[in-house]
Figure (cartoon, rainbow over the protein chains, first blue to last red):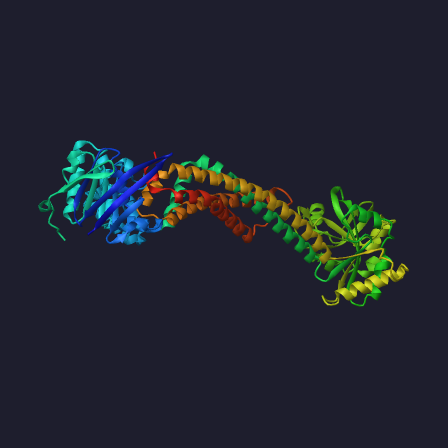
Length: 234
Length: 405
């Protein structure tokens, strides 16, 4: 099992009030799944995503990623997991404004301690994969929204993580571009990656092979049909 | 790589906002500049002083009326001492067995005249034979002043090249007669040029026999006596001999203090070191204040930078940057910033020192250690004052940072 979540709670202290963002979530995911996490705002889907992405740690419960309990790791160990196992794609792209596309894609490799030459080569390959080989030297403000999100996808892929974690990846794009980006995720998944998309749009979720719906910090429904799983290419 | 990237980011930001960067770095620039400039002057003075002391050759000490006085009170104590005379010098020459050379010296200022050409402010030196060793003079033409010139109080002189040039032009001065003040002298020799020291020409002089000098210009007054011992080892013995001879001539009782002064280059060096030590302390104070202010400004600008780039920090953390990665990135940036200030300060300081040396008599010599010190200082400022902002950046929560607008 890639992800094994048991009885996850996350409590925030807002003033004197305790907010239970996650209220006992249990969830398993196998490698090469394509999962959409859906729910209205305040349902806890962002908190769940942050914990799966090792940006946050749960108040209680356990989260095993590749059999490692990441709920108890130190900051530096979490940084290492984010670097090696997680590739993030954000709604607002989150690219470094002053760096060109190539350098943005290289970023995870910088922190993985990979040498300059290999880094260049792998970043080029990742940009090639998302169809941006002719835009490597462009800065984010010289790229369209769809191109920016594809740079972000290349960055998420470049260190060959176990999970691609996308948070509303089409939220800032027009419909046509959104479809294009979702097609890109489809391709990534078909190549054997695990993709988790957090969204509130049914259109986006429809691309996934499994849909987890959340409400009030709990999983409301978890639907997926095993026969719709893709054939693992590798 | 991280290092190069961070330094690059800092330099790009510097270039993008030149005025802001300049103002940010002003404190550092001024601090480093003042250190470099003052150290250059001190170094220049060091060379000047050691040149001056070496000019008389080694193993030389001076006997004079007042000795080495550094305060008004000391002067009050020594003002009524008896004069040192040429006869004292003769006695020392005969009885200080460890002395190789005893030279009596006195000087004044005259206007020199040849035909209808005047040359003002010529240093007139009264000297006994052997003076060329103490004054470090080499003949270009003619001869030096000799024993007979002195005994007979002849009106002869040896002139410096500037005097020869100004008065005679292309003529050969040797054998010609010039007026020095009220008397007419025959020029018997011309020396080689020595150049300037502290803006003062060393070549604008006329040397005459000491007894001639006393007869024509000094009814009363004290001469100075330079004594060169045989070697370094005999310096203390020679000094003791000189002291005994003078005390004997003056009938001083055992236990009473000397009523004359004996000065060595070590005394001069000591005073000089005290002086430059003072300059040094003041400079360090001034530099420390401007560097402190400079450092605080850098800290401020780094705090602004951390806030402005909160989102970037979030992105980097999401991509796997550890705290120490963020910490070192911002430390490298602040150090790059302060180093740029340091380098500008070094350039400005060297420029200032060279400019001042060119337009004033102050000597200046830029020393490598002062440049290294400037670079080290500015780097340390960047590290020290960049620590807190960098720490703040490293502590940011990645989720908060990513949400930051």
